[in-house]
Image (cartoon, rainbow over all chains, first blue to last red; front, side, top):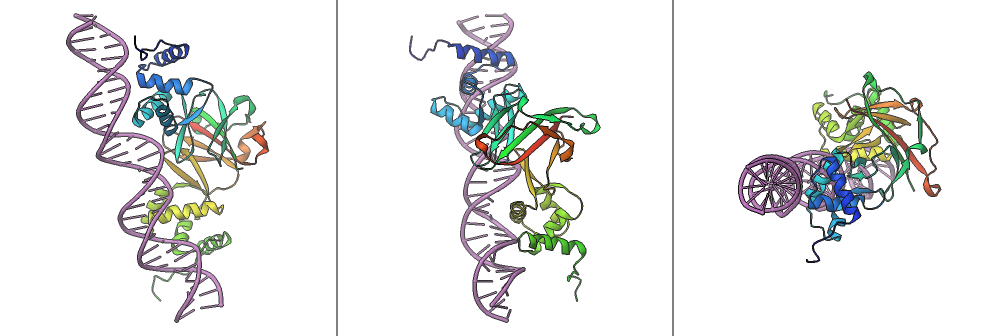
Length: 142
Length: 142
DNA sequence: CAAGTTGTTTAGAATAATTCTAATTAGACA
DNA sequence: TGTCTAATTAGAATTATTCTAAACAACTTG
């Protein structure tokens, strides 16, 4: 009967279902992190950012768990990993086809819808190999 | 009169001139590294790779110097830095407009000439900001 | 619902890439 | 040549990330 016993809200249910559907055990930590990631619209997030956010929300997880969760989510297609800057990588909750603006000054990323960029004349992959994806990054200086 | 006294070859002269033109003091180490980088066609290279190559050629440089030189060369427009993989960055001797194939299996990069990829309908940068460059990376799985 | 199995979490150590520090060395130019 | 200043260096420090091995918790079965 304590306040600690949460009744499952809509967001909790959908997040839980997403984890299960992906074949990931919905543990406390994964649920909490997924909720932070997927609660509202799409977002870009580094491991460190998510870790700090979790701390802010009194979610007690280790940094190792954050890395594990991000990689597990990525492996199951719930996230997409982007590396623009060799100093750290970002995880994008938008896993569909799309591209990015990268603001060099702030290190921020912004999505560009797939249909905003049209690539004509993509060269064939050498040796008929399979293209796993095409990333377009538009770097903004100022 | 010793063998140690090298007479400047064509490549040495051009490399020396390139450094001077870029406003970089042509020190022994920078000359040796630039020679390795620019001797023949374009190439992609990590700091570690260049360091090992230097060792193989009995060029006695520290890893810190390799990093310094690569960053100095990049700052002066002699190289372009690319980060595809958050685990390490590559430096490309081709500083003109062009794009890349990235072979996920081997970690190798291959240039794609600018005219092989045509991007139509680039979105305007938010707030009229200046685009510093557009990178297209085609990832090859197999 | 108790026990067992397996997948997860964790703190902390370990690693890898890169940068920093402070002392030494060496181009440039008078 | 001597002086000035930038470049080099070894090694320590830092940062992002991964590993390790033990503790734990989710699912399953009895």
